[in-house]
Amino acid sequence: MDHFPYSRSSDQFFRAIPKVDLHRHLEGSIRLSTLIDIGRSHDIDIPKSRKIRDMVQISEEEVFSHQDFLSKFKILRSFFRSQEIIERITIEAIEDASKDNVRYLELRFTPAALSQTEGFLVDDIIRWVSDATKKAEHLFSVKTRLIVSVNRHESLKLAEYIIQSALDHKKDGVLAVDLAGDEANYPGLDFAEIFQEAKKSGLKVSIHAGEWSGAENVRNAICVLEADRIGHGIRVLEDPSTVMIAKESQIPFEVCITSNYQSGAIDFHSIHPFSRMLELGLNATINSDDPSISGINLSDEYQFANSTLGIDIPSLFKRIEAAAEAAFLCKLEKNILLQSLSMELDSISEMQSRDFL
Image 1 (cartoon, helix red, strand yellow):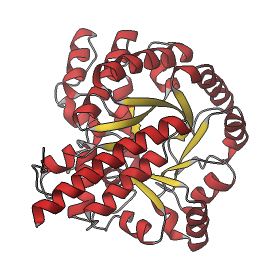
Image 2 (cartoon, one colour):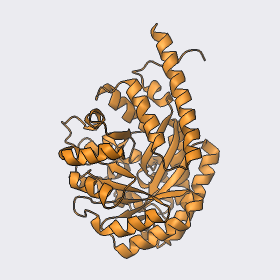
Image 3 (cartoon, helix red, strand yellow):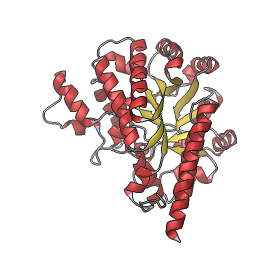
Image 4 (cartoon, helix red, strand yellow):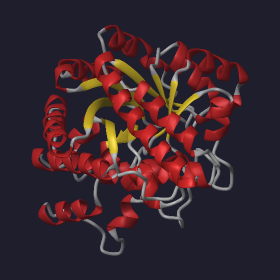
């Protein structure tokens, strides 16, 4: 192919470029068709007056708030009824990433939440997701690694147990732990010692911060919880001193644009701060968060950043490379990924340049 067949403004262009997704929740990546199948086969009570799409996906008619956004997870997690279902959902999530031309995916999931409906062991949940990930990697050629999440509202004892299980599965592709959940009401400092110990034990650390609460949480995530990456982090801009800390450290931010609007982190009528974060020299990347809940894919996020936020294609390509650089991979695997992406992105840029001549 001596030219790239899609214009820079087309849907096909953004689907065709190779991408990296560092922040995608398994529970927010379930196909609606799969939910319907599971509901029928397991007699899950779905109110007839509400379509399943309305129950689990954000609509324009809803009030965008973190309470409403998190409520979708409560419904979705009730569908994790068996090992077979968990493996199916994992495989399909990776297949969907492949169809969107995601070349590297870090998929995070919350074992405690997925175990509650049927009383599964946390260790079994992690093993089932890990085994399914290996199968899907082989089937769809998407390098995928796992991040195990704990929720702020749950006990420290449970967090310790889950993180130990994550450590036990490092050889199975679990690279990191994540602190997630209701940041507005549970800041997370109580988990500092646990996450510091996880890092000393060889796990990377991602902390949801600066999404539904202010820049102080971003500062604490960096300086106290010793985060390697920040989930979302968009409210870092509220405090210049925290911006400086983030800039000097070049800590990667896992920004999820559509999710930030739908969860009420950003007012629907406001301009998303992603472009401002780049202007200030912050290391911000683009990610999907919860494709099923938001009704988007990663290509949509890149297209929005280009068409609405005005970020040009070369800058977006640099963000893809920045995401690869921020991956929780070993040095050799990261270099291979970076080289492959850079070669392909350079080739696309060259072909596009020739087409404009």
